Image 1 (tube, rainbow, N blue to C red):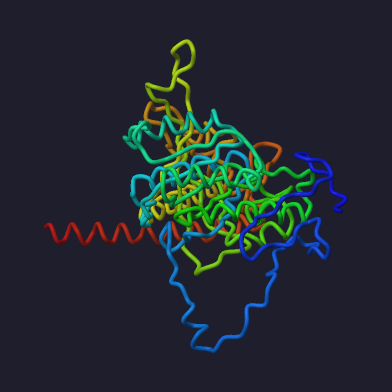
Image 2: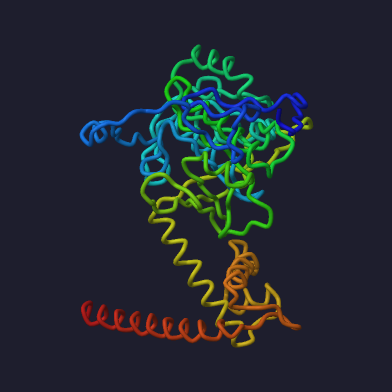
Length: 399
């Protein structure tokens, strides 16, 4: 018997997914210590022709990114927008609308709201308002609260059979449905991942997105889900969200399928008339909006230009405070106030790139910052010269 102690039933072991190939039970003799599934029978030998005829074309949920019947971890640090993005994809799936420039397969959605059901409710109310749908009339279904997926699988299946085939399932979050006692245990997390994979076998063979917290001390270049190698080994892909001025969805560590261009989102703090507190005051919440490729490029160009302007201003010693820097660059809000947020975002990006550092009075360029400033100044000179030439040619043409 396993020596692990489990919260749900101490000493009894963790129930694993009962889907083919049937994984070894943690308590079974000869169980794989890594927690990975192994087939229990020999599949037999087939010819080359038979082998290739077994190929099944990819059936995408989000075109070029996620496939039906696949299990994806969706990993991001707290506050990055996991729930907002997954709720947006759920709404677009129900509506059959694209995600940015990518087609989304229309279909029914089931959302496991385990970590914070009230927060999910507020965001869904806001999304209904801004995407103009009636929450009483849409084919999205929620399960609030936590439970053991494997233990409740037959009941989940019965509920799904009542409503019909499902296109998409969200598990928010994976940790909320983990009933082991050690989130770093390979065997426990491997079993947990296989339990989540059971959901892909429900009617409709839905894609399953499991929102995950990253490993400890994660940074944007190391967004792997908690749980050791056994957990991600059971995933078909690890989608990631990185937050800057916008939120970037891409992948790290594992992705079964071709690479894809990132998708960018804007997180908006919103209020809606139907979302108020007990005294009738508006309650703000956050929702995500997908950006088109063109809009993403436009924003990236603007951010790069802002970075260059701030870098050169720091080099010239302009402004020790955010307000002074904004005034020196003539950056104002619509109300005419110095746009301190625009300066702050540029400085944050430069700091992350290690181009600037904090000095005793304000900011200073690093060695690499001075090199980049030379490049930025040359680029700015070329752009200004090109603009003058184009203006001169236009005057001659018009004259």
